[in-house]
Image (cartoon, rainbow, N blue to C red; front, side, top):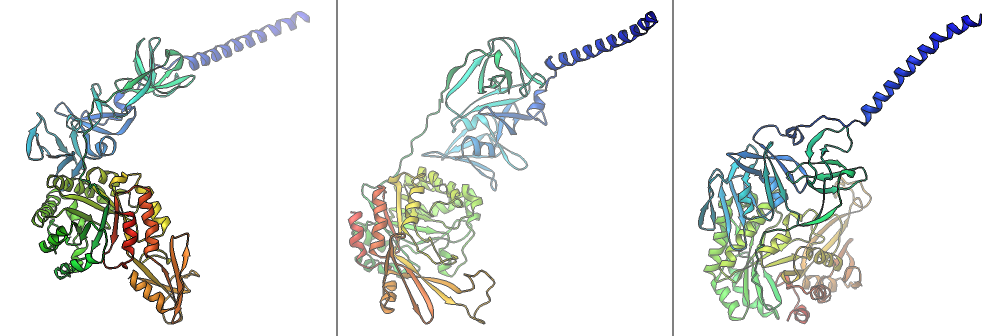
Length: 587
């Protein structure tokens, strides 16, 4: 019996052993599979997501871009948006007239699409290939042409076609491979191989790690390599061969004391002597003479040679203002500014008209006051300032540009670029609260002015910044709402209490209202001005007073930040005593 049992257990042991061997082999196979590097390769054309042989991959500062350039007749072309957004935003594409423009300190560079020639102001130059090719929805520009006017380096590689662009200068880290190995798409031996790396190959270190380090090859392949396959890290330096041009400005050797003079008809020019006799220390007057007349860039004019001569005889410069809303004052419809700014020929016509007027009337400067510009044409607006600045400089005409206080919404006005080309940037530090505001408030509280100056100085040098201050205030009225007087669509508690309105008043008008109603102003440290409130006929009136005292607080900001001077809107709204305050700060 014992022998029989022994014979029965032998097959069991054998079977168990066989199963154990199979399991061990399976586990071993799994282990071998797990730790054996994948030999799978990813095609570079797939890695760069290239759809056609014409595509050129763009590796920009060690990042593979999702957009592609084009290889046309053996030359690399980059799409305009990439040029503008990543290489040099000073390039401008006129999609209406198919022109590429670039503005230097002294010249306007212009190239027509599908042409080998381009202009440097009036001088004609050429390449041996087309400069700009137009696509379905963008333009493509030859990279060697871009290099003439932009600070970057590039190398072109084949199989597949790709261009490696560098715009970041300074130190970067490198390490050489200690052995023959591979760069993979991702960290891990199972990730597909992008390229083989020979021992001694120098790689740029992008993201060091204990196991897998992110690296870039010189020919634009970015992936991961085993960290232990890298040698010691060292530092190298990218050095630019680009020589930045110098921009100069027409700046005065005195603090600017500018008064805007609102002129709505030619007869108003005759009042300049009376206007100036009421001032002290003013050295620049800016009459609102020119306005955009139509979408072809023609201007309306209220200019007067006698006016200019009188000012010059009294040592006062004339910086005539051009606006995009003055046509309304002449009973005309204000033309669409966008239709002018986005066409090169129309911008040129507008600029030529302004320069012709400046020469004709012997003007010292032009003051641009284009307001409510469509954010979509911010680049075209800046291009207008660039182009106008060149012709102003060539004719010795000062160019100043009026600006709102910086906000996220007004960032497209690009005050930093304005300051590169214009001589002065004027901050209109008023209309903090305006007709249409949801609450009553100051025209220019001291906090609003200080913030506007501080934020503008982040973009504009102090010696080019002029602080615009108000000679007016707003009178706010809160009329109780009763049944039948107004349909209160807004059901909020505040809106249902009163109807809010306001109107602009001169310093003198505001003071007369206060005196007539026996109101007592109270100083407000928060706003840096006197505040008064009174009731007349059941209506509550509120005034944040602009006077010599509030103006002095603003002038202290101008002086404390060593700004180029002050400007005041508008002459005739002030009381005579403000000039004694002004000349304390602007001599």
